[in-house]
Amino acid sequence: MAVTVEQETPFVVLDDRDRIVGVGPKAESQFGPLVGARLWECFPGSEPLFKPYYDAARRSGEPLTFVQFYDGNVARIRAVPLADGRLELHWEQLARLDTLTLGSLAESLDESLALLDEQGESYERETMRRALRVIQGGV
Image 1 (tube, rainbow, N blue to C red):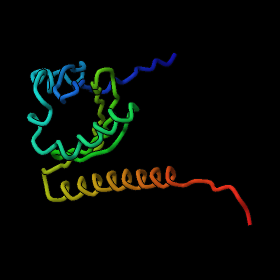
Image 2 (cartoon, rainbow, N blue to C red; image 1 turned 180 degrees about the vertical axis):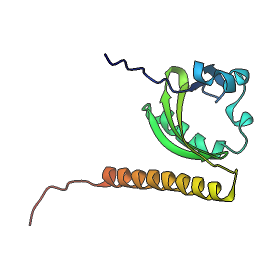
Image 3 (cartoon, rainbow, N blue to C red; image 1 turned 90 degrees about the horizontal axis):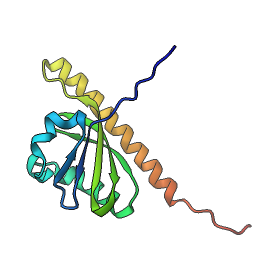
């Protein structure tokens, strides 16, 4: 008999002013003490990297998934709009820079760049797909 266990991703909930107002069990140790604080004050330099995606998810009302590098990590983030401008953020760490040796740094940097390149190519394909239109008519 096989048993499947659903892996819960860490998540936080932001209010409409990007304050942390909720924390999932897998994020409690890191984000629990930050409840009530603005996300951008807790993670300097992160606002220009993440906020445009969060704002786009809020504007569209649709979940948005993207890959981003910050503080030595490459993560896949899913921003899910909730009521009243709140946003639920789930993430999965894809890579982390390993600074133990120059060799491990180079290897982990190559892996991180490959993941980011792949995401960029996927984004470009999706952008092109949305831009294409079928025009009726013939020759």
